[in-house]
Length: 311
Image 1 (cartoon, one colour):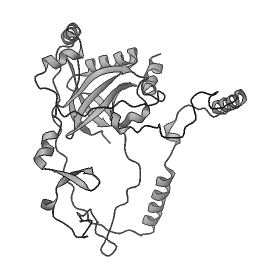
Image 2 (cartoon, rainbow, N blue to C red):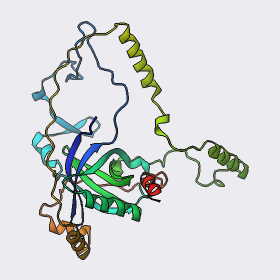
Image 3 (cartoon, one colour):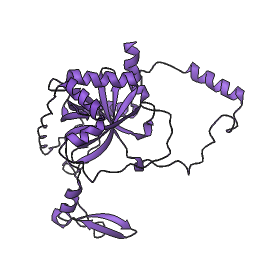
Image 4 (tube, rainbow, N blue to C red):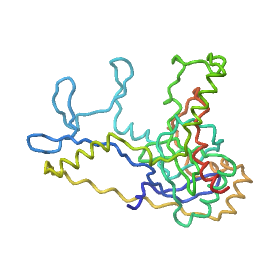
């Protein structure tokens, strides 16, 4: 099945724009149980129910509120909420680059493949190979369907992956957890215990083969579905027609690469981009909070595969 384009825009760093398209990098393999009315086999959907009265209410009688204190809410109008939406730019705006060992896995949320469009292959390859050679990843902001995301641009194999990230304030601290102290001596581990543990880890170490691991629950459920279907135990359910997806917006146009690189270097890289772009950045950007997080398990592994192939 051909990969569907989810979003079109451009990667921006310094004065360089790379026209790209966003593709889903994962698919949900879990079991999706639909609700059905056992009397008529009609689909059962979500209803707007007043939790106090138990009665269904109409859409026009629903307002949106943010909990302020225990039982107190602040109601926001549709206009106020719309005014706080981030500005849609169709741009993956790289704000800085960091070492590929600095971002813990806990920040990574959802990956997307990035592919070049509109003759952007050369500058796409330039960014990919530069990130690989410097062992860097790009920290960016991107707006997808009116929602602003923090993201990291990671080179992996022949392509670039945009991994949406959690904001700093979304990461819970583990200071309240009862964890053993860091370091073998502080944790009371003996040299013999460490030696045996390392030997066991080495004995169980294999090359990573993702196809080896299967969702056993999904396989069992689907085997049950196939068996019941062969026995004729099938119900007919009439589903409402789904609305067609809107067409993706057109991508950005690439400019002369050498000239843009030279201008970016002369004017200070990414800082010059803010002076050359007319629209101002949105004042409603979410702020990230500094948290104490582990330095292990970083995105470095994502780019290691391509480095090995190149070697």
